Image 1 (tube, rainbow, N blue to C red):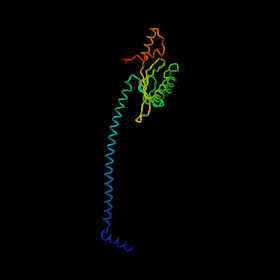
Image 2 (cartoon, rainbow, N blue to C red):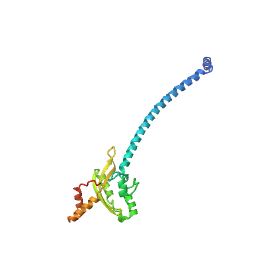
Image 3 (cartoon, rainbow, N blue to C red):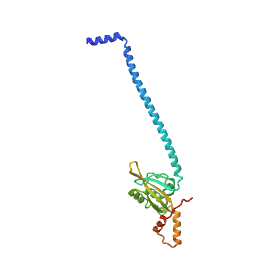
Image 4 (spheres, one colour):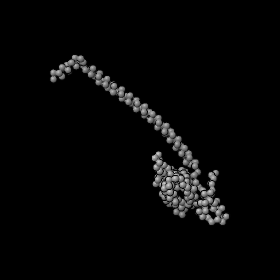
Length: 221
């Protein structure tokens, strides 16, 4: 008790108004504030770099998006990407306007889109795609590039596509989707049928397939 009183008396004599103690607290607070400012400056620099990087990535994304949109309606062949469940992830103008007739097919599969089209035009006018699902399954099963000829009526008109499909893999090598390109070869097939009729050959799918395998379809302008 006496020692404590003596200490307090000594402090009073040295600093009767407690100014030194206040200054000490202020110095400590100033040091802490300076540390906070330095930390804030470092965080600001990091955020600035992050936003700058984000801005560059946004520019790259917008450029890629612009290129994709330009290609979307410039490529005459049908192009699409589907997930492993067969639902569309990407579908260009050619397939949206020439086969599935849906401006927003994403998340839908061929059966859903075909059913919607049949409701619009009737089953007798839309028979295309009865084997499309099976060809997707074949590609997923074999995990390699494959070629198919898919045909049927689309809005009452015969259509045959020469389709090339392959799998899409992620960085781990796992199959995550399928990609397809379909070329309208109806005109060429019609001409082949005419040739077979003129030469009195039996018109069979096998014969047409044999001819197609040895026939190079040039781009039509």
